[in-house]
Image (tube, rainbow, N blue to C red; front, side, top):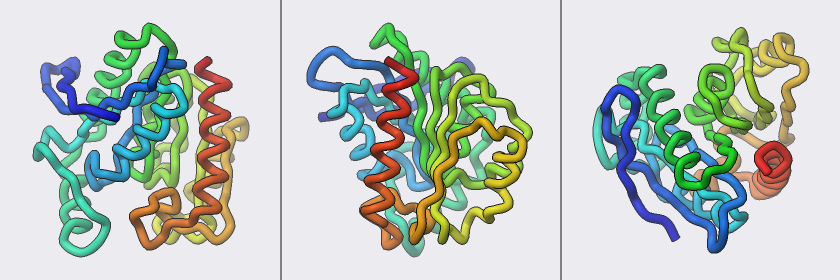
Length: 224
């Protein structure tokens, strides 16, 4: 369904992006923001799934500034490499790349564009809502979000967290809720970090399906 394209950030950096188009006229655009494992098979499948729901989905390769073609699995050396690449990633530059994907989706669709991100991408979705100009944002298990609780979203935001997530202390999420009680936050019993990914041991199909339904309804409400 999808294909790779090249887009350009405001600073002149060229990055690749996976694009999945719907069968007919797109309902809206959607930027799918990766985890620390690159634009791998899971992220491409997320983009494909939203394209099937009518969205023009774009997944920018945010690690292209450090290494091109990154596509990692979730265990062992690949997981270590993902963490190492994360340490090399400048958040402001990553947001510039997300912004390029937003601009590309807007140009291609001439419609509203949202963002949806997972883990590292969940944090970037939150920061995109505060610093960029999407029309809505969805974040799954956003790492380190408590450190950015003081950021003020300009658009509607929906957040998803697993009750068993050992990577994100509940205090981080509570800090966001305290600062922004209007934000829609969902917790999932029995779900850990990465519960949405069917390629990880932590996959929770019930939580994933419930969160997916909520995210789709939220995006349609604010983008259509």
